[in-house]
Length: 254
Image (cartoon, rainbow, N blue to C red; front, side, top):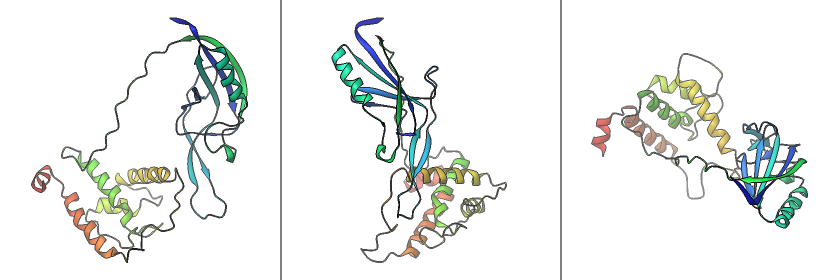
């Protein structure tokens, strides 16, 4: 049904540089800003990544979420005066999104139109993210091995770096130990765990670089020395319970 009172004001533009945004659609000054691949087909965009280097700082670049293509701005109101204020405000902008001072989100406005407003159906409701604690007794054996490898992979010496606690822990399961030791090199073998550990380690690295990490040291030495040998023994002791994981052992420990 057409709402004769409200109207849909739409402003479209082309992105001359990537727009930095965690989502392809967000709200600003009461306007919905949506990034699209093509204006004619309303093609959706896949999120990409860009790196930001800081002069004088020797560290990995900050990874930012970005979109390239076109942008469509929508504003619904029954007041033509209010709509004109919003449009004039947007037309005065040269950039959209975050990090505009670095040249991101530069835009060239192309089209402007006014249409009757049609109320859209309610969006689909997604289930909330659930973070589960511990390894469930009904998890497949392959999933348990992968989770154990991901928890232990930073505590062994690799070709790229030493153990994060400077002490290499002993991993009893050969399959898990091999995946942890080789997750940074490009060798492919028959170990099914290796490509999975590589993928999730790289994914975690991208997530950690989403925002600048300003600390100079991984550990706080101001409160005294750290007994890394003790930490190693504690990890190895916990590892015994993880690798011998069974529903019965969970019941006994609880």
